[in-house]
Length: 173
Image 1 (cartoon, rainbow, N blue to C red):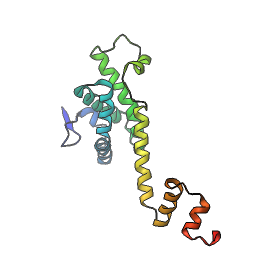
Image 2 (cartoon, rainbow, N blue to C red; image 1 turned 45 degrees about the vertical axis):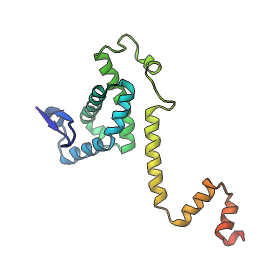
Image 3 (cartoon, rainbow, N blue to C red; image 1 turned 90 degrees about the vertical axis):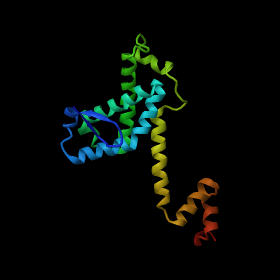
Image 4 (cartoon, rainbow, N blue to C red; image 1 turned 180 degrees about the horizontal axis):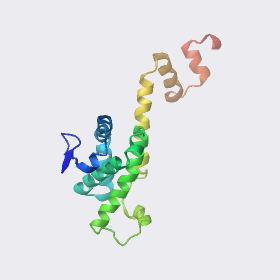
């Protein structure tokens, strides 16, 4: 017997695995994590397996692992969960490729040389993107003067003295 974790996505979870999520809060948090990171994880898996069905299976298996390790996963913040899941999805992709007999005779350590990758590893790209998003939110919450100071310092590359003079600070008149 299977169960949908979200109605609009066809993520089937075996009912015995899903029963380990004892509260609605746990189910809601996992559903939220799935909603947030499903596309990123699917992209990471596609870069490894180059097959939509296998990538979807890897994402599914990653969330089954998240349920099986619920005490660890549900206590993580989003950044830590994303790091954990990128590592897990890489292993799940390798497992799926082995089942399909792709690269079956090659040791795991040699996969980095075989599998195509960008100059920056996927987990670092994901972490950078997450950091960038948090930075945008924090800068948006600053007052206008603080935003001007940051702009003068980092975009216009003005010295602190030039910035103070431009803003009319009484100490540098």
